[in-house]
Amino acid sequence: MIQRLSLLSTLALTLLLAACSSSNEVRITEGIQEKEPSSLNPVTAGTPIIVHTDTSARLVTIRYGSSLPEGFLVCINRMGRESALLKALPLKGATSLRTAEILEGKPSVNDSVVQASPERSLELGKIYRDPDA
Image (cartoon, rainbow, N blue to C red):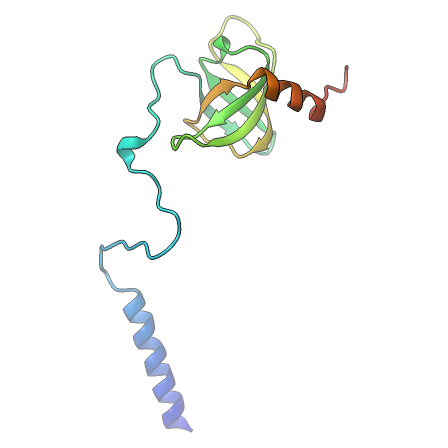
């Protein structure tokens, strides 16, 4: 019994050490591979981008957000995929920053922000109504 326990513990230790080897090799055996870094969506100067997120208050701060109208906004991550839906808050003062509420998704810093299409805005307006209206 003791020999069997010793053998099992030695085997477990060997497997653990083999799994923790110091190989710098990265292998993807299954799943979706992400795009190459060269094919990421570039962000040009003046493009509205997220510079701060507050998930507890469900707010984001957008640099160059003054170029965006009030209403529904869409966040696009570096891979070109939609990451979140936002609703822009009114501008306060003469600043290039805009604050927006997070409606859906999980926006990240450096996601670009664009205005939702008129059709999508109409659809979202039915779902997310203002309590004052």
